[in-house]
Image (cartoon, rainbow, N blue to C red; front, side, top):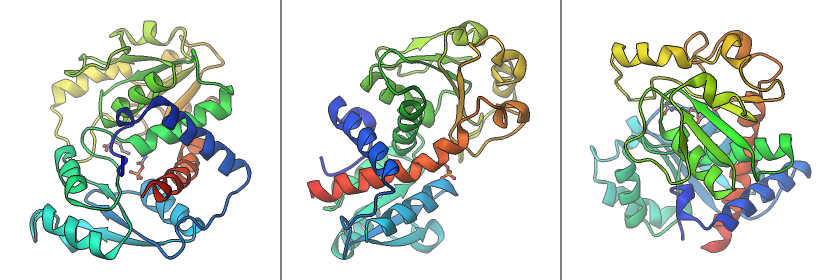
Length: 289
Ligand code: CP
Ligand code: NVA
């Protein structure tokens, strides 16, 4: 497979190898030449801090060159068609990461391009985040098998990829949300009661209630309020549980200041691990071309 679109597109062993490779790259502060003489395009139709900087640094540390393109520059699908942009870029550069709205458009781009395409977040999934999250879990617990991960709040792109990587790596994934997902993933547990959902959790994860580009009505936001990760809710979980969030966080909405900045929080490890996970991913994709 030339592209990295979703965790579930890959064999479980490849996903485990990618995370373990990221772990060893982190331990050795790996610098390589996998992208020497190569250029990776980074297309952003939505804002970013972590994805942009971690990709640029990972490309740099593998000897490659990054070109970052914003939506106002290329106007994908408006100034010219996805097909034409994919064909043109395939003639110039060696790989493209895209952060876009529509998952279908990302897949269309990947079908048209002859070079590897990486999903840097769509409305459907965020697989690069999931790789970094798995690395964070492995660093803390030293294993995957049997870990219990509970996700609280809006069932979104981040929860989808996290659920997929949990299933791939034999972790138990529970989602606690006001609404059960329209397309549930096999093996995922749904528990609408947030206290019950985190009683046995090793890790508790949450994300923004309003994703970039999403419109959410105020009634849904009211339904999400009992899922706020605050000190009272966290006290229902084992004291050894870690707190995770992909960031950016909306302090006082899905998570309180005290919990985000508390001793159980691993959010900055997760952010750093984006760089290590993507270095392993880029090295892997450069080899399979
Ligand atoms: N977590 C994440 O993808 O962050 P950015 O939106 O800043 O890239
Ligand atoms: N669910 C969030 C994740 C941001 C990294 C969003 O799509 O905006």
